[in-house]
Image (cartoon, rainbow, N blue to C red; front, top):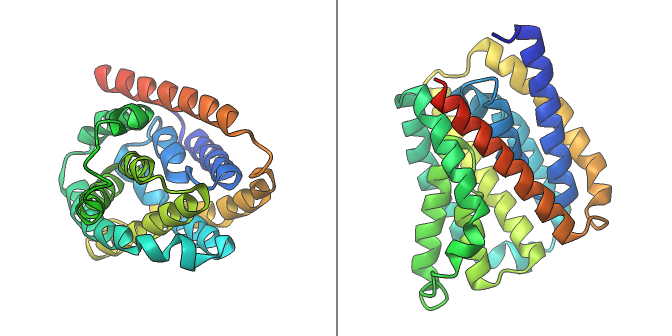
Length: 249
């Protein structure tokens, strides 16, 4: 059993690292932070403590990105469907057993790692953009509501409709923000924010946005291929650890 003080230190370091990744590449905070925290916490608790820092990080990215007319405006229905999915996903999060979500999170990470390969088969997406927006927006919300990782569904959609990088960062952050606000509302009304969880979340909300802002200076300096290679290795490692933890009970 890890001592509580070491758990808090690990969570702070993990969330800070994830915030740095998000600042450098524009996305990734919940996708990196959630599985890292899930190594020492159950997934439900990890999701809860990440609510406030995720809201702040996504808000800052949307405000700093600008150019909403060309980035967010064409794709705003995606966030709307994401709200519905997040509501349903969060309901599942608060009612299903905690041990259910660790293997689910590992599987979602594996899905993300193979998103480009899977996306090749979705040739119907460009021909039916409204249907695709509804399907993948709702799916992203469901994933975000349960295990805090929306990216697999959003990445598959963005690849098929050939969304440019700037729009992708803005739209993804908008979906993360609206989904997280929906999740926060459900968790508040169901009484899942205990004083201890709220205190931890507030600390992370103070520290993580500052780290992210500092890391933004590296956003245009990191080669895309280098980032993707190391990100994929990290996610593969985390998914493997989560699966091993599941098998070990």
